[in-house]
Image (cartoon, rainbow over all chains, first blue to last red; front, side, top):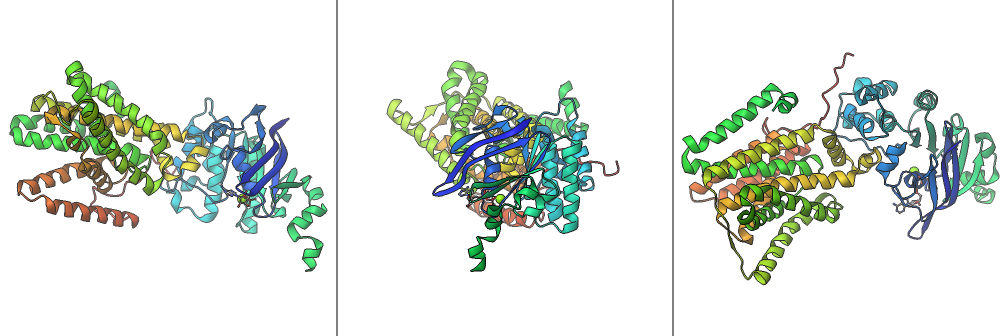
Amino acid sequence: MTILRLNKIDKRFGGIKALKSVDFEVEEASIAGIVGPNGAGKTTLFNIVTGYYKPDGGYVIFDNKNITGLKPHQICKMGIARTYQIVRPFKDMRVFDNIMVGAKFGRPLDKRNPEKWAREVLEFTGLINRANEFARNLTFTELRRFEVARALACNPKILLLDEVLAGLNPAEVTVACEMIKKINKEFNITIVIIEHVLKGVWALAEKVMVLHHGEKIGEGKPEEVFKMKQVEEAYLGTRWEAVA
Amino acid sequence: MKVLMALLSSKQIAALTLFIVVTASVPVFGGTYAASILIIVLSFIALVSAWQIISGYAGYILLGSAAFYGLGMYMSALLTPILTLYGAIPASAAVCFAAALGLGVPFLRIKGPYFIIATLALGELIRNIVTFTETNYFRTLGRITIMYDLTTILYLLIINAVAVILAVYFIKNSKFGLGLMSIKNDEIAAESCGIPTTKYKLLAFGITAVFMGSTGAIMASRAGYIDPDIAFPAYISIYTLVMGIIGGLGNLIGGIVSAIILTLLFEIFLSMGNPYPFGILLGILLILSVLLRGKRVTLLRIFRMQKITVQKPLSPAK
Ligand SMILES: Nc1ncnc2c1ncn2[C@@H]1O[C@H](COP(=O)(O)OP(=O)(O)O)[C@@H](O)[C@H]1O
Ligand SMILES: [Mg+2]
């Protein structure tokens, strides 16, 4: 079943066309990837799905409901949570309280206790021994995990991860990938992950979309997509440019 | 009472009881002069505590407290003849709530220093609207208010102050308070975590206005006569902000203590016939508290930087 469907999404910023008629579908319980060079429009796409930007054209269907034009907090409550490429912790609040925000304001937890859930999330992301720390004191790597933890605390059906692997060393990338897979399998959460490098999503995604200058230039299984000529050109320039 | 007992610690109940007993006995033992100073202290305690909601918790620094204080005064002057002061207080507070919701829609879109400046303009705007209406439609600038005796005013202000303190305390420890503090830290992240930021900011602004309005409403019956300059004095806006900042953003007790100390200091300078050094002192204190805040150094222990924490900290070994 398709849980998220983007239909002909257009977005302009002044003269720049950040997205040009982008279609994308995400299967429930899958991991999907979005890749593309810097400025391709990946983050803009997340901003549209989460309600920060209204698309100039097209619509977004989530869980069989049209969510285009809803407010970000409404979309979060329906079950879409995200992380930010540039992390946005509540700096002067304790890590535990940060996570409690997700647990209390995100998609309702039914009968689960928010504090217990927050604790569970912190244990899962390996931040439990930092629970009493102020978020501003977390290290770079911890902040990356923290962003995922707070989004996970929102109890989402689908989790949008914006370049959570960027800047991590190879060992940390391996750990992070394991964590993402576990979120997908154990919590049964659909995942869409953005990376600007192709190999970031290689091991994770079942399906990848490649964006370039706001256009979808390829879609499919990772190994198929990366063989496409237009994808190669987007990353390396055309053969002519590469020679020049 | 039972509810309060369940929500407050015994220490807090003791402190609150002490506060009520001490303030309520001032007219009995301290005479009229002490009572009239206490009235100013209690007004500022209410104003600065109310200020903490929109500024200390939600992070929107308000430099326009006079707007709601004065609106409360004018509403009270209009309504006391009809409803008595006891009816006029809640009615004036309700008008301030409605005004804050209406004004909040455009104003709370403005962020950071621009919000501060805009709210300074807000006080002036309301003062000018009132002046305009009064001179053009009522052919008057001032209004005689129905006076209540000093003790009644004092007791009403005690109830008012306790009500604000309790309200602010409960907001701080509520889900609403957690939402406000998230907004102060990062509004965009707060919204994406499911917090209805627009609604929360408006509500916070509204509650702040309610208690500033109720304070003004009571003070109208102390004044005997009001005009726009009495009802909307710039010093109300400035002192409230300075007390809040010196006491610590979001620090309820710090704000109350600085309201007490600064008002008393002002009275001392005033009784010596020269209030100007007080302004200088206030300026220095403000600069110090802003400078030291950045370095997270403590000014006085009681004025220490409020560490924002909502939940009880986790016990580490578990
Ligand atoms: N708020 C905005 N205002 C103007 N231009 C924007 C805005 N957000 C993004 N853009 C532009 O849209 C394009 C896509 O940006 P973005 O989605 O952030 O790219 P990516 O995340 O793929 O690196 C860029 O050219 C960027 O400058
Ligand atoms: Mg990006």
